[in-house]
Length: 251
Image 1 (cartoon, rainbow, N blue to C red):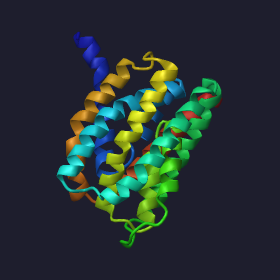
Image 2 (cartoon, one colour; image 1 turned 45 degrees about the vertical axis):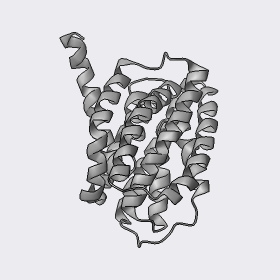
Image 3 (tube, rainbow, N blue to C red; image 1 turned 180 degrees about the horizontal axis):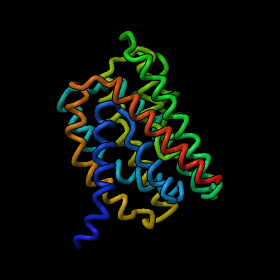
């Protein structure tokens, strides 16, 4: 790789590293941050979602193993999430590939902006009282669908709602991250079948490198760092970048 090519890759490595660091610590953010960046740069929503999910297949594998090592996983909760999440992911990926890119872009950005506002709101309500969550399978189905259709959303939808129900933050984050591997594998296979491999770009290679490097550290941070300020920062950044993308789409 030439020096110029590596220099072009560095910003995406940095974004992938930062996004996965937050994702590993909070159980959310890699998909929404990466997808917002790519869609804002003009990448078609289906291609952005496909590329991000392909990258996440690797980052979530490393993250899931790391969370297992740190004993951050509730395996009963994992079993209730993973199958509905995979079903929702296939449906969301199929729907997104049937929509024209120019029509889908502002819709996806509006969705991601709403997720950003939701993250900021969740930060004010953090942490909840610890108790076993009752609504799990519908969250997995909705989170998988929105994640594939919007290029991100599994963590914000599933993690945040489980926390609001009172689930243990550390166990929830580890479990949702680990279940996400099976979601991203399913969604990536669906996109590969419908789009081929043309969606994998240099930007996504950078996200992959940065994400894999950060994944083990993110699992460790899930036990050490207070999530509330990071959650607020992610919400603010996501809302601003999505809002800018919407402004560009219309003006």
